[in-house]
Image (cartoon, rainbow, N blue to C red; front, top):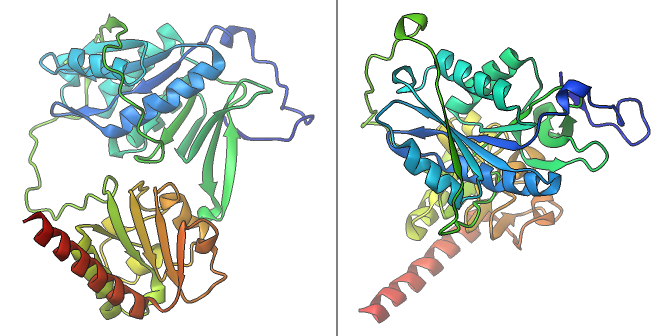
Length: 363
């Protein structure tokens, strides 16, 4: 359903949108929430949607679905502050707790009735599951795990860019002959928009029209995994990451030492995770987490595109590598050409001394 972007002048580039699809207008964001909290990726997507909609000269809408006692109205007010003009609310007992079947029907019905031209979802566990089934039901194109979203000036189509071939290439895809155009983006790929106090919008309520006996799956209970060692890598302010340049798992402990002093999270490249040095939750890159910290320290990491797409938007990137020609130095803000096994302990001690001095001065 989706086709790769083609240079101007080739067949398909100036494809005329079928007449019945010209009525599709607006950019929608599915707002994901759970137990009273909205996933931050939804606000990030509203910022991206606002930019796309302004280019097209259309409005931005949020879609909220949940049970009768869930605070969808409150979430809608927050969505307005992050850029939405309209929110579609669907309350129903069968929508309390995510299940694919009722959510797919609800979102599909809304799209068929109100006809948005673009529909964005977070590439979370829920968003990925829902996006695939909705795109299949609507028989439209879906570009997953996008790193960039733009409007193509020649066709006014959504130009969705994502890594391909294992992260070695970036491919821009456009759904030219189908609507809505759908895309998912992982958390932290898009910047968090500025919250605008006092901004408001309109609310449209809708009904689902399903009963519990219509649904194959049943939600029995929610059991939180209290024993899980949660890794808050995606939203960490400081991350220290290590690559195979550190050579052994014992040497990787130097990354942990620096992270402990800085109060940082620990990240890693795919080869490090595959080697079993750290758990998969700490992988940064196309097949891992996308991060946007204030400080990202990369030790023994070459900077291949598979890793780069996961951390290139950090506010400050400090790279440590023995190879002066390593790709990571092409986009790092500060580079140290040296052996990470010597540089990391020196940084750890320097930060420890500096932070101890600040604590004494504050006292």
